[in-house]
Length: 123
Picture 1: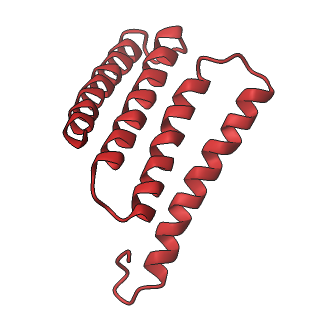
Picture 2: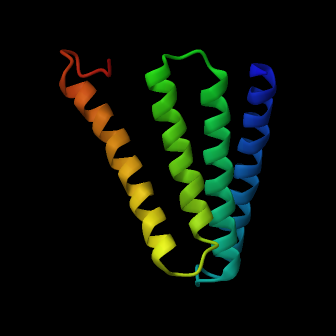
């Protein structure tokens, strides 16, 4: 199962890179004017890299706390990308709040860990 998840993580990461290339090439072609192509490339890159990271976190043997933080971080990216397909409304605002909460808590835990150590390295 772990090997399958690692392979899936690699495939999803490659898809994220393809989506990123699509995003950047379409932005260059359209001279960075807002477009549906930009939104699609952005959404797909975020969804693919987030799900890739989730698969990787589930497949590694880290401590459960570190694994859970990684899963939430991947989920934040996947949610962020998914919301780009939704029309503005209360659901999008709720998803935004979840994404920002995950980012702030995740980085806050890193900051707290580094502030609490002598060498400035995470615990």
